[in-house]
Amino acid sequence: QVQLVESGGGLVQAGDSLRLSCTASGRTFSSYGMGWFRQAPGKEREFVAAISWITGYTHHADSVKGRFTISRDNAKNTVYLQMDSLKPEDTAIYYCAASASYRGSWSANKADRPYYDYWGQGTQVTVSS
Image 1 (spheres, rainbow, N blue to C red):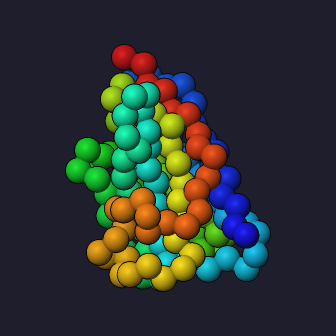
Image 2: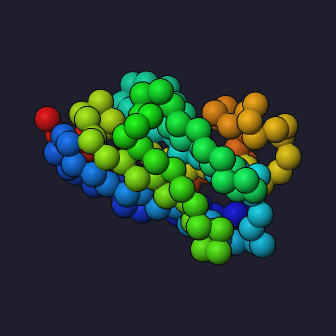
Protein backbone atom coordinates (compact mmCIF):
# COMPACT_ATOMS: atom_id res chain seq x y z
CA GLN A 1 0.00 0.00 0.00
CA VAL A 2 1.15 3.53 -0.77
CA GLN A 3 0.36 6.55 1.34
CA LEU A 4 0.44 10.08 0.00
CA VAL A 5 0.71 12.96 2.44
CA GLU A 6 0.25 16.54 1.27
CA SER A 7 1.36 19.67 3.07
CA GLY A 8 1.79 23.37 2.43
CA GLY A 9 -1.75 24.63 2.07
CA GLY A 10 -3.04 27.71 3.82
CA LEU A 11 -4.76 31.07 3.62
CA VAL A 12 -3.07 33.70 1.45
CA GLN A 13 -3.96 36.89 -0.38
CA ALA A 14 -4.34 37.27 -4.11
CA GLY A 15 -0.94 37.56 -5.76
CA ASP A 16 0.85 35.55 -3.09
CA SER A 17 2.66 32.24 -3.52
CA LEU A 18 2.44 28.81 -1.89
CA ARG A 19 4.33 25.57 -2.40
CA LEU A 20 2.54 22.30 -1.88
CA SER A 21 4.44 19.08 -1.18
CA CYS A 22 3.36 15.46 -1.47
CA THR A 23 5.47 12.62 -0.14
CA ALA A 24 4.84 8.98 -0.96
CA SER A 25 5.56 6.26 1.58
CA GLY A 26 4.69 2.65 2.21
CA ARG A 27 5.77 -0.31 0.10
CA THR A 28 8.69 0.20 -2.23
CA PHE A 29 7.38 3.10 -4.22
CA SER A 30 7.68 3.26 -7.94
CA SER A 31 5.45 5.32 -10.12
CA TYR A 32 4.65 6.08 -13.69
CA GLY A 33 3.46 9.55 -12.88
CA MET A 34 2.16 11.86 -10.20
CA GLY A 35 -0.31 14.67 -10.42
CA TRP A 36 -2.19 17.40 -8.64
CA PHE A 37 -5.95 17.87 -8.82
CA ARG A 38 -8.22 20.33 -7.04
CA GLN A 39 -11.82 20.51 -6.02
CA ALA A 40 -13.69 23.69 -5.20
CA PRO A 41 -16.99 23.63 -3.28
CA GLY A 42 -19.82 22.42 -5.50
CA LYS A 43 -17.51 21.59 -8.39
CA GLU A 44 -15.98 18.49 -9.92
CA ARG A 45 -12.41 17.54 -9.09
CA GLU A 46 -10.26 18.95 -11.88
CA PHE A 47 -6.79 18.36 -13.19
CA VAL A 48 -4.09 20.88 -12.31
CA ALA A 49 -0.69 19.44 -13.24
CA ALA A 50 1.14 16.16 -13.86
CA ILE A 51 4.71 14.93 -14.07
CA SER A 52 6.15 11.75 -15.51
CA TRP A 53 8.16 9.99 -12.83
CA ILE A 54 10.39 8.43 -15.48
CA THR A 55 11.12 11.29 -17.89
CA GLY A 56 10.30 14.36 -15.84
CA TYR A 57 7.98 15.67 -18.57
CA THR A 58 5.31 17.97 -17.18
CA HIS A 59 1.86 19.12 -18.18
CA HIS A 60 -0.22 21.93 -16.70
CA ALA A 61 -3.87 22.84 -17.10
CA ASP A 62 -4.47 25.98 -19.15
CA SER A 63 -5.98 27.70 -16.11
CA VAL A 64 -2.68 27.53 -14.20
CA LYS A 65 -0.12 27.55 -17.01
CA GLY A 66 2.52 30.20 -16.38
CA ARG A 67 1.59 30.50 -12.68
CA PHE A 68 1.96 26.97 -11.29
CA THR A 69 4.92 24.62 -11.69
CA ILE A 70 5.04 20.93 -10.84
CA SER A 71 8.39 19.30 -10.02
CA ARG A 72 9.69 16.15 -8.38
CA ASP A 73 12.48 14.82 -6.22
CA ASN A 74 12.78 11.12 -6.98
CA ALA A 75 15.18 10.47 -4.13
CA LYS A 76 12.65 11.82 -1.65
CA ASN A 77 9.58 10.33 -3.39
CA THR A 78 8.17 13.83 -3.30
CA VAL A 79 6.30 15.95 -5.81
CA TYR A 80 5.86 19.71 -5.45
CA LEU A 81 3.44 22.29 -6.78
CA GLN A 82 4.79 25.82 -6.78
CA MET A 83 1.85 28.21 -7.02
CA ASP A 84 2.57 31.85 -7.86
CA SER A 85 0.27 34.79 -8.60
CA LEU A 86 -2.57 33.06 -6.80
CA LYS A 87 -6.12 34.13 -7.58
CA PRO A 88 -9.32 33.74 -5.55
CA GLU A 89 -10.53 31.22 -8.14
CA ASP A 90 -7.61 28.96 -7.15
CA THR A 91 -9.34 28.35 -3.81
CA ALA A 92 -9.93 24.61 -3.46
CA ILE A 93 -8.80 21.45 -1.76
CA TYR A 94 -5.70 20.25 -3.58
CA TYR A 95 -5.12 16.51 -3.93
CA CYS A 96 -1.95 14.67 -4.82
CA ALA A 97 -2.26 11.48 -6.88
CA ALA A 98 0.11 8.71 -7.94
CA SER A 99 -0.02 6.16 -10.71
CA ALA A 100 1.72 2.97 -9.55
CA SER A 101 0.40 0.47 -12.07
CA TYR A 102 0.46 0.63 -15.84
CA ARG A 103 -2.80 2.03 -17.18
CA GLY A 104 -1.68 3.24 -20.56
CA SER A 105 0.80 5.87 -21.59
CA TRP A 106 1.43 8.84 -19.36
CA SER A 107 1.18 11.22 -22.27
CA ALA A 108 -2.33 10.05 -23.17
CA ASN A 109 -3.75 9.70 -19.68
CA LYS A 110 -1.95 12.16 -17.41
CA ALA A 111 -4.96 14.42 -16.86
CA ASP A 112 -7.49 11.64 -16.22
CA ARG A 113 -8.50 10.73 -12.68
CA PRO A 114 -8.79 6.95 -13.39
CA TYR A 115 -5.10 6.91 -14.39
CA TYR A 116 -4.13 7.34 -10.75
CA ASP A 117 -4.19 4.54 -8.17
CA TYR A 118 -3.52 6.45 -4.99
CA TRP A 119 -4.76 9.75 -3.61
CA GLY A 120 -3.77 11.92 -0.70
CA GLN A 121 -6.19 13.32 1.86
CA GLY A 122 -6.05 16.82 0.40
CA THR A 123 -4.81 20.18 1.61
CA GLN A 124 -6.89 23.36 1.67
CA VAL A 125 -5.76 26.41 -0.26
CA THR A 126 -7.74 29.59 0.28
CA VAL A 127 -6.97 32.78 -1.63
CA SER A 128 -8.62 35.98 -0.45
CA SER A 129 -9.18 38.97 -2.71
